[in-house]
Image 1 (cartoon, rainbow, N blue to C red):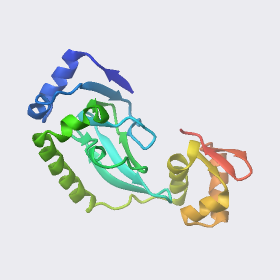
Image 2 (tube, helix red, strand yellow):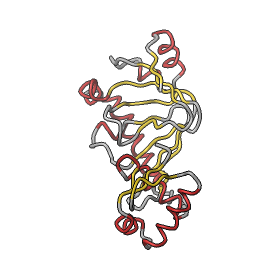
Image 3 (cartoon, one colour):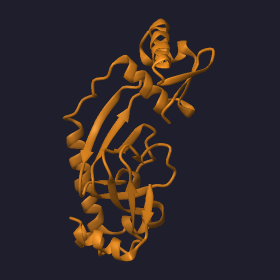
Image 4 (tube, rainbow, N blue to C red):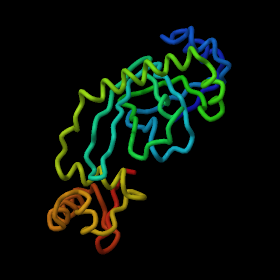
Amino acid sequence: MERIFDKEKIADSIAKSKYCNLLETLDIDFYLIKYDKGELVCSPFQTELLFQIVEQGSIAIYFIRDDGSRYSLSNGTADYFLGDMDLFYPKSGSIYAEAENSLTCIAFSIEKHRETLLSNSKFLSFICKSLSAKIGAITTMDAAPASLTERVLSYMRYKCEGATLKGVEQAAFHLHCSPRQLQRILNRCEADGMVRKLGKGTYQANYI
């Protein structure tokens, strides 16, 4: 991730944005953020709340259930934005946004500018329309199909601290499979180099 504070580049990006007329009325400290493909744009691990508008590239937004299955929420390209929910609700512990390719976003701090945003009727009207559209889109989507191996790896990566699974029986309960099934998958993933065994019943995903 790279943050860009060059005023000319920021002004140029805002001028090209679909929301230019709105953004130019806000007394906000804007900057740009560049992400590489596969980098998380938003996740429960991030403590800083950001409002981000995609200028170039695309993102995938998804929810990770407790059993490791992935539920697709949305996909976004230019002019799609993140952070509308964070204005009003505590940050979700299971929602992720991932750069599908090289990505550039216009960004600003929600915490720093929350009162300014909430007192701007034009901005709030804009947010209401966005949330309504997103809720409508979510109702037409379903969970992305995933094999048990994929669910195990997602569970380790997103639900286990440090991507480390501790206790095969307890994890099997959450993953809705038998401990024997889970152990076979862990053994296979270890042989394939996707996880490594740290101790009895303890495994860590190799991509964190």
